Amino acid sequence: MKKKLPEWVPENAGTGFTTHILPLYKSRNNSNPSIVQKHIKDTGEIKKKINESLSLSEYKEGVLAKDKVILARAITLVESNADKHFDLAQELIKEILPFTGNSIRIGITGVPGAGKSTFIETFGLHIIELGKSPAVLAIDPSSTVSKGSILGDKTRMETLSKNDNAFIRPSPSSGNLGGVTRKTKETLLLCEAAGFDVILIETVGVGQNEVTVRSMVDFFLLMLIAGAGDELQGIKKGVFELADAILINKADGNNIIATQTTNTIYNNTLHYLADATPGWKTKSYTCSAKNNIGIDNIWTIISQFVDYTKKTKIFQDRRHQQTITWFKNMLHEEVLNQFYKKDNMKSKLDTVISEILNQKITPVVGVKKMMS
Ligand code: GDP
Image (cartoon, rainbow, N blue to C red; front, top):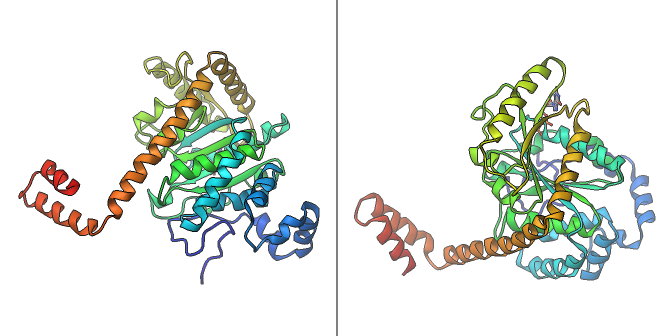
């Protein structure tokens, strides 16, 4: 039987585009039509066009009005690889750009099981109590790393996803032109324009996405657990150097002493690493995402970080640099796309690779041959 996919999944999406359905959404749509109708009535005419295409101004108005249904559709538009959606998506991004920039952008990484989604749920609910509204973008690594579904198998952040002040969206990590670079960045901008003022971008710390995510956030958090060495945790060494804070999760029950020991070890090691953000000393902290211990402390640390970087102009400079990096990354990807799209490129590549493997030519000559 074909698995039912959420409405944001493009038609004919392959297994690379994994995602999941949250139970609340299901029950609203399937078992209680009156709620759907009430929702449409409450939120205006525009929702009636649920199956029709929206115009640029309808997208724009909906996003700026923080209409989550339209925001979700705008993200689908931006994520689409279809040529016919590209121009409209770019127009929309241009239109909403003046309304962006007013959030704190936070990246969170750590291996599966470290407790990232539990943390995001507790942390998200904590900052909602402080009057903030968080948007969570989870980069699904399945298409590049495991070819399976990591996010798809479990229901995550259930309480947060039901909260009116929060927005949660898985983000595909594959695709043409940009993949994570373009789609996650543009999704982030759409969420900002919608008025979400804390954007959390979650990745699994085993792939290449961390450097990309670091290049679009203000604060980068690495989540670990006690008792496993870095190698066991599958964290690449370079990822430590990207972090503005390390958080040892599951500091509860029998695990408290182990977490404190691990915390001390990391704090000693961090002395020898270069700062991820100039002048900001990266430190390690403990928390229990499950029991809501130490979560308020992390928000305090992030707030101090934002104050410090804004005062020193690092915040603004970094965002400026990030925009340049964003453009350059997309340019590089487009140049590569154009190159590989050229006539017979695949068969030429196969021929050159076999010549290299048979030692008929050197790799350098192979490159020259491809370029000519
Ligand atoms: P993720 O894969 O990094 O998103 O991890 P999850 O949030 O799904 O958590 C993995 C497992 O660790 C789940 O069984 C959670 O209940 C558990 N867990 C998460 N945070 C804590 C915590 O603070 N304390 C304890 N004891 N368990 C936790």
